Every structure is written in C-alpha cells, then in structure tokens.
Image 1 (cartoon, rainbow, N blue to C red):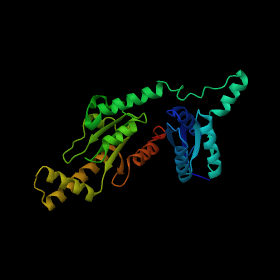
Image 2 (image 1 turned 180 degrees about the vertical axis):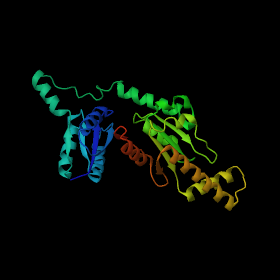
Image 3 (image 1 turned 90 degrees about the horizontal axis):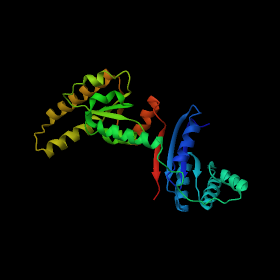
Image 4 (image 1 turned 45 degrees about the vertical axis):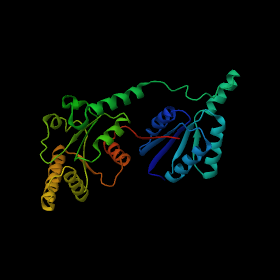
Length: 276
C-alpha cells in the first residue's frame, strides 16, 4: 500500500472546486497528502501530458471538466493507462438533466467567484510582502510562519510561494552581526520558525562574487573566516529560536515548502499548474 497520497485536480476553469473537494476528502486520511491543481485544461494534448505525470507520480486524478467530450477523453485514456480517475461533475449533471429535462449549457467558469479562500490568500500575500526582510516587526506575532536565513537563501521567493497557499509568512535576514530583535524572541514558542542555510562552498562563492562586484578586497583566508563566522552565528541563532533548519543548496522552493508544511502541519501542500 502507498504511504503517500497525491491527487491531481484537473479543471477547464480555475480548478478551485476540484481542489477544495480533494482537500476536504484527503483530510479524512492520516497520510502524507499533496494536491496539484491543473487549470485551463481545454485540449486533449494537455490531458495526455497530465496523465503521463499522474502515471509517473502514482497520482489519483479527479476532474471537473464541463465539456463532456473532453471528460470522456480523459476517462478513456486514464483507463487505458491504469490510472484511477474520478469525474466530479458529469454524474450530477446527468441526474439534473433527468430531473428537469434541461441539458447543461457546458459553460466553463460559472462557479468561479471571489470567496473566503481567495481573500485568505490575498491577505497572506499582503502580509508576507509587508513583513519581508525584517520589516513591520510590531505585527510579527500575527504570522503563521517565521523564516530566517542567510542572504541568498531564497527567503522572499519561499515566503511568496507559501503566501499563495494562504500562509502568512514573515522573513528575516541573518548576517554576521545580526542580533535577534525582542519581537522575534517573544514569539519563538508560539510561531513556527525555520532557519535557511546553504553549504559553505556555495556561500563562499557568493561572497567572492559580491566582493568582485563591489571591487572589495577578497583575500581567500579572510573570506573563509568571514563565511565560517557567518554560518556559526546563523546556527547559534537557529538553535536559540528552536528553528527547523533546512539546507536549500540543492532543494527547490516547492520541496522546501512541502517539508515545512509537513513538519508543522500547516495547510495542505498545494501546487498549481496552469496549462498553456
């Protein structure tokens, strides 16, 4: 049996209906869950691309395709490939047609509207922008997550990615002479904290590039010492704040976000692919 559950939510509109159903259902199972939403799926070649990915990821496919012909194509191809696929719309539309004698209009996007989920994401994005790089510490206690990290560890891109999942993130840069503000110390037991780092060689090369860019002296021994001290200071701060420490050297943002949401049981791990 699988120890992970991956659901592909496929739609010819924005896909929020399928995503919400997947989220509500999968929460009933004590298993590592992830949901990938595919929106604007309107062509057969897009269906084939998604099914290839589903086969590779061993994913369940659920779909809300208003165009019945496209839904039938997905169902047939999924059966051929041995992929579990479930149609969320057609059975109910058939029942309504039988009851009323009226055929569905098959108009895409009628259900998309501004709802609480949308506003939650907007608020999370606005909060994360306002709390980028240590700003607005007076409201940091409202964060769902605090990210600290050395320069160039993708703090801002990671914050924005998680904000798009509805998570309010504040991030803070750690440098050689950083002293942790009281506002952060005061929330260390109440707000999950993550410390981002990179390997010594990568950090050293970044410092060399900076020295070259600003035409600064970059004696090898002095740079080595600087980087070593910078890392030591970061790890001291991470330990003091009880951070989950993540090395971002070889990881991508989605992998890092997945690790964080799993560790702290933050909202479900979502990703979104808008088909072209």
